[in-house]
Length: 209
Ligand code: 3PG
View (tube, rainbow, N blue to C red):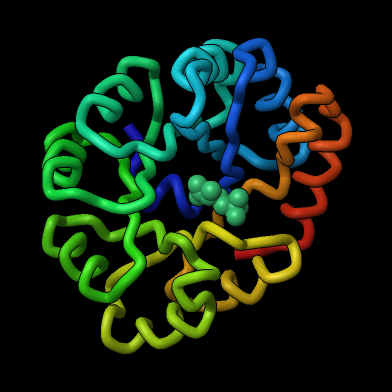
């Protein structure tokens, strides 16, 4: 089982994927792998999400596929059953944090304030999803947290784009960034796998950690 640190240090970018058609899961994952992206987050926002995760686990062993938008312990359990290698949440409840710790699954719990990040550190989490990154102050907020929260690492997500990702990654407390820009819904719906490989390659070549 991979740790949260291992997940977020595998590459500079975790694409946030919303998959409506399970038949898209495997070709989408292969397109991203071809572009150098090996960690994928499939959000639990569609009825197809759990099947999509299982399909990627089955067909793309080189990918570390996680489940995103986990909001409660039942969704966490379903993600683990589907084979997810890690979990991500937009924010954190007491019940979800306890279930995530208990499960042993690598988990990136969401926080938008210093108090939330400190509460998560108390629970034992050392990597936190900073969400919604852009709306919660972006690079300036993370820079301000460096001195008082030196032990925490962040994965900013929400409003991260090709244009600002490098600014986040330049911060010592940013482990990687998350975002949907490498797999836009329109390209997925159009099965534009070559176009998604190009976006992934552009991101991985342009971004370093
Ligand atoms: C998330 O779930 O982390 C966000 O919806 C992704 O945000 P983005 O679409 O702004 O990249």
